[in-house]
Length: 326
Image 1 (cartoon, rainbow, N blue to C red):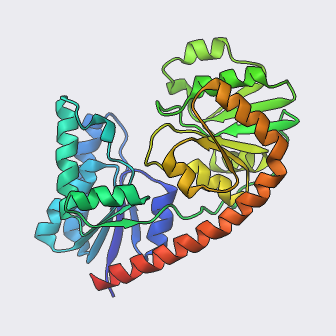
Image 2 (cartoon, helix red, strand yellow):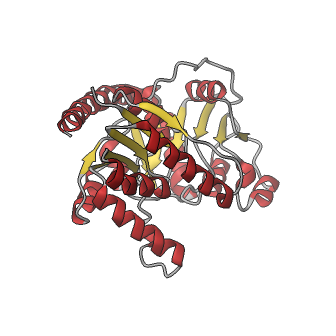
């Protein structure tokens, strides 16, 4: 029987669930401090572990590109196989950047693509890119998560939206908040995530409408309870080739969704969703539309849940066959 480990520097649900599904021991290394402290210490922890693990197969999560580079390089010495779960960490928008850190990132990206035995991505476009770079790709979207800590809780509105957010640059935070001006006070919007890190937080708080609540960071049980208690979940990114974790959570809970208008999102989450551009006028119109057809959308997202579960199981079985062949 093969000895398999899943190594990560970031504790993600996808990694935990895939490691369990693939019978790999989950090893998450953590280190507080700035990157100048974290990266050297995490690198040493990883190197020490690999020299003592006697692994046959090492799975690793990318991000981090540095972790993936270490795992791919040590494969030449320790003779294990490497399978990288890459998500969508390619930074295509920075390929032409002249900054040294992005030049280094893309150099390491090409190296790890070439020397990994397999790189798992979430869609066919990324698989094609890997193969163009002389890598071996496999498409496996996220498995629908298990949300067992969810309990119904009272919310403020007669109709409640939850915008699942990390307050990152690809999310139209201010546009979503501005869209609430077009809805009456019976509608309430909750926005998850650490808003204190947002670049325009002071101006945002100053003009925050009364029908908008910023939740801040929530515990897992509180987060799940908020999602299951909402009427509509909003998950918007303007990044193409990205499948958002919040949309998987919405499907698990069979909640109607307002999603970003990207081809990748529309092709995968093809039922139970309305798609919006990251502009307040369009977002507001789609929010009003979901109120009218929410019952129909709930039926559709239930159908999508069955389709995605079947598709994931088929792809997962194909991945198992590949792993056994290594």
